[in-house]
Length: 253
Image (cartoon, rainbow, N blue to C red; front, side, top):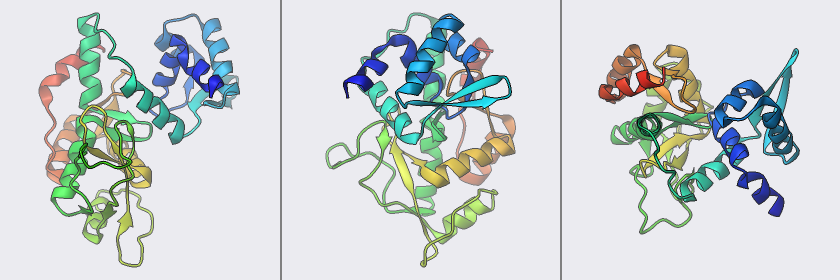
């Protein structure tokens, strides 16, 4: 436990881990830019993270790419981010970044923020997902907590919900005997509601990227809804993307 605390206590290593929170394998050069330190310093910190079991390294030819070990590590980092005191917003650009992060981001390998909870809420409202209401009820929560995988609610994707997602081309696991599929969820730390995670959440995010409905926007963990995505999300999920924040994305372009 002491070794883990020491690894996470360093500001540079914390920035590296946060940059890896979108589930991608990134080169040391990009991680150095995210952490704001020299490449040699980044390599030293990456070595400690790899030795500590938080990060894995993947050689590709002459290059090496680094990735969070798994979703469990991402959940720990997300939870610690929620517990940490809010970082002081020192510039307009930083304030814009936080707005983008809340609007639409990846939580390791699935969608979170306003976009993630809106899609999940739509599935619940249409009875494509049953078992709960999509809300985090602090007063009755047993194991659920912010920035962590949910355990209190047994959500299921109904046969109709499977048909809805399959019609979009989402690769779904085989259903159970009753035709439904158990779902996993997280308690979203910015929206304090549930968003879809697990196998189905990952498959949905992958498919939206494939369709070109969402794309990376150059800000760590943040994603942008494209014009095609705006139309598709409204048509398929009755989710309206809030266009005015687009001007924030240009600040980071």
